[in-house]
Amino acid sequence: MNPAKVRTEVAGTVWKIVAAKGASLAAGETILIIESMKMEIPIEAPRACTLSEILVSEGDVLREDDVVALIA
Image (cartoon, rainbow, N blue to C red; front, side, top):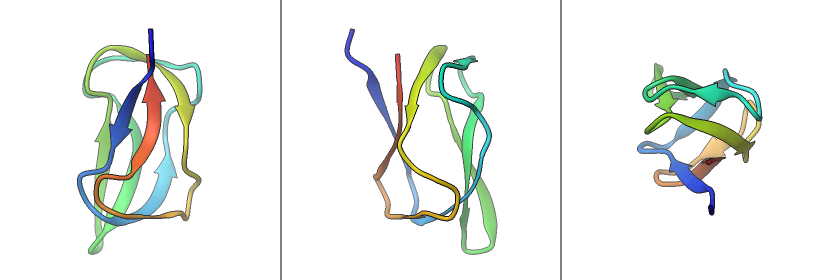
C-alpha cells in the first residue's frame, strides 16, 4: 500500500512536531502545529493511520498545499 500524503491548508511556519514517526494515530489526532498569522493551526491525521514519515522540521517555512507527512 502506497503512503498517503498529508498536506497543509495554509502557509506558515512549523511551530511544533507533535507525533513521532511510526506512531499510530486516530482520525483527527494532531501530527504537527503550524504558526500562521499568529495563530496555531494543527495539521491532523485525516483517518486512523500509522505515521510513516515526517517531511518537515520545526522552524521550516511552508506554503499552502505543501506535503508535510506520509501516512499508511
